[in-house]
Image 1 (cartoon, rainbow, N blue to C red):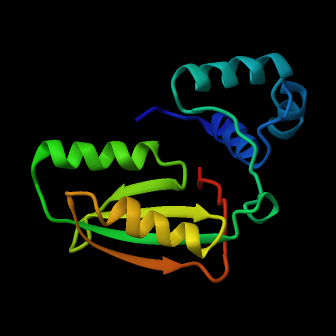
Image 2 (image 1 turned 30 degrees about the vertical axis):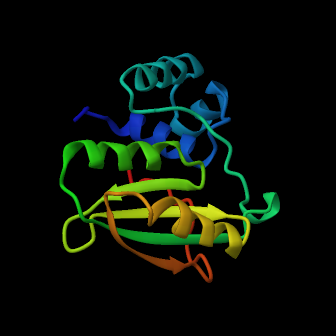
Length: 153
């Protein structure tokens, strides 16, 4: 774990809310100079604390109306099958996040697609036929109560 001081935390909090902030804008938020903010940001980037900068895009505005969580139980503990499933998950653009879990479900996938036909295809033609998959259970999101939260730094 990397030790972060009060100013690092203020910078990270501000950048999570708006990654486009300039060093001068960060200075106004943190009570540091712009050059100190620039050096600290660069250090946080070099240490891998800041992994990158992205735009938060509205799923609905770009036609991705269906979001879901898919629980996957694997039937095969063979390393090559698990690796093959991991590659499938990593390369499928509809799968936004994938988590390995404890308990009866092995993986939880967060997915987004344009419509139910695409969801059906993802489940029926991509996930279920994989040799490592024993079962799949999907949960379609009806409404996001909270989305794109920031880390409590």
